[in-house]
Length: 187
Image (tube, rainbow, N blue to C red; front, side, top):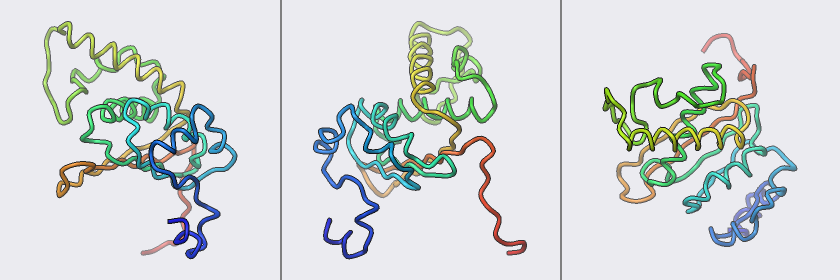
């Protein structure tokens, strides 16, 4: 891989070509290697499991806040990553609507459970399980709000032709007031 990157003359723009375990050993808790420059695109393709939030929080400050993209592989159909993704979605919605980051009523406001994709189950009386899910969502949302600054948008893609690792999510960082440039007037 290093030879190909050198041949394409992009090796100077590439960071970390290690496998998942080496990547985490290399970065550990010190993510300073990512914070010296902005990256326009960061592709995260590693099985971080429950460490995904910490990893993304460490990389996020280096994603260009003026439209930079972070792409996360295997994000929809993996249970652990999905919980994190749902929390990111709630945080994005709140910020785009101009609401405070405190998520004290995030699960109540919609009347829906966010634990199941596509679920539209409404409950008239919250159960203990519903309350536990709401508490987990609030805690996760508050952690994210501290770790992930600024505005962002998200779109996820399912790859139905694959059984495993069959999705990816694109996050775009957007500073307040950021707009893509306009280069033409007509088509």
